[in-house]
Image (cartoon, rainbow, N blue to C red; front, side):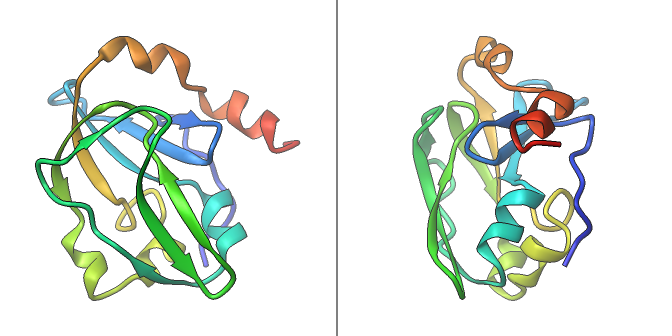
Length: 132
């Protein structure tokens, strides 16, 4: 499993999800679950990939991740339309545990409301919610 970390270039949702705004195209964000979320879940054994073209709403579930311990909703930190899913996860779910901020990303969305970013936390604020 990955070491505990909360990269500074991400925005964080209180439900342990993250968003990385694409520097080349700020209308697109990559979404995933945090180190804390994957660590709490344990080994991920199932992720139901959502469909490209599906809409996601901030603060609402857009997928489920199942682990050896539990089934957990994946909450969207931003609203938008899914423009890409991480197809590599279909063959290697371990990436979610091993590299939650890199190869373990879940989906990319075209952001519907850029102002929603202001409601997310930076790494320091998120870590503080975890007692760090």
